[in-house]
Image (cartoon, rainbow, N blue to C red; front, side, top):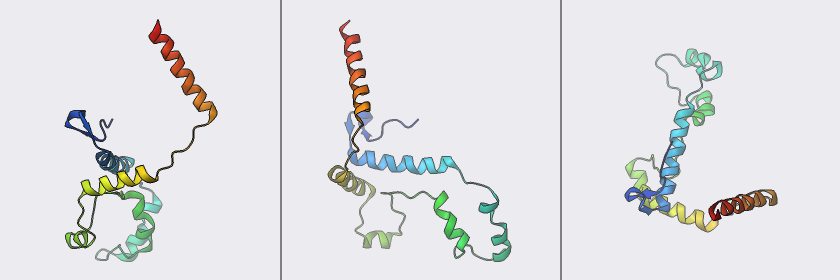
Amino acid sequence: MIYGPGMWESGITMSLGQVVSDADFVRMIKTVLVGVPVNEETLAIDVIHSVGIKGQYLGEDHTFEHFRQVQSSPLVMDRNNRQDWLAEGGKDMAEKSAILARKILETHKPSVLSNEAIEKIHQIVLDAEKQLLK
């Protein structure tokens, strides 16, 4: 269980930018926990025989077709080298997370709940109120 996304100071303070960073970490952790599939297709024995012991696999179609399945794609963590990172503005993870949090707040359009879901939630609230008034 991952507890406390967005929390600072033992939960006394919350940061929307920290929520974005923490969500990025959670996505990467989930990718690792899924694991690497091992089967005939992913083992690519034919590619191994073709490339050989001293060859490189980065240029192989098979590698290109499969690498995204096992590599996480962070939103705010930067994997560039320092020169490229500086050329792109040199924003650290906290800055990028705060910017993304603001963008989400400005552009997100939440989906509307169905009338059935709204009624169920309303009934839960009414039942809870009855319990509190006993």
